[in-house]
Amino acid sequence: MSRALPTKEDLVGRRFGKLEVIGRSDKRGPRGERTVPLWECRCECGNITYKATDTLTNPEFSMCNDCVGKYAGQKMREKAGYVDGTQISRITSTKLISTNTSGCRGVYFDKRSGLWRARLKFKGKLMNFGSYKNFEDAVKARKAAEQEYYGEYLKEDISNANTQ
View 1 (cartoon, rainbow, N blue to C red):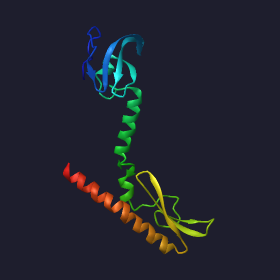
View 2: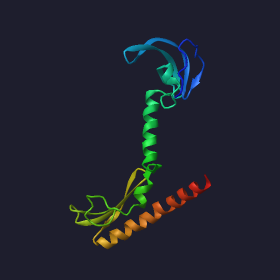
View 3: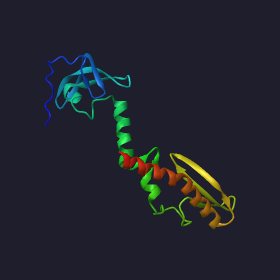
View 4: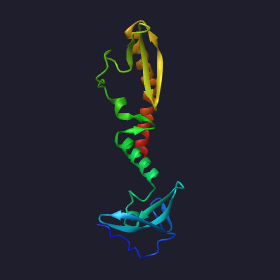
C-alpha cells in the first residue's frame, strides 16, 4: 500500500502524473466524515484542478477531470480492441449481428429503392458501395471493399505488432 505524503510538506513545483502543484488552496475536500486541504494544480492540458495530497500520489487520478474522462474512454476503446476508430475484433469476426436479415455483413435490402445495398464502416466512417438488383452483386461489392480497406489495414496492424 502506498503511503500518502504528509500534508505539512510543501508540494509547490512538484509534478505528479499530469499535474504540477502550483500552490496551496483554501479549499477543502471530503474524506469520510472529515475534510482535508486541497492543492491547486495545473494539468498538462492547461486546466486548473484541486487535489488532496493522497490523490496526487495515485497515478490514475493525477490529472484533471477532463483528462480522466479521456483516459478512461481511451482505455475502454483499447480494451475493446479499437485501433484508429476501428474495432479489429469486429473486422475479423464472422458472426452476424442479430438484426442482420440478409445473411451477409454489410449487405441489406433497401425497401424504398427495391435494391440490395453494400456498405462498410471503417475508421469511424460509414461508406456505401452501391445499390444492386442482385443480392450476389451486393455481396461481391462488399467483399471487394473488405479486401480494399480491411485487408491492407490488418496487414499493417500485424506488421506493427511484430515490430514492437
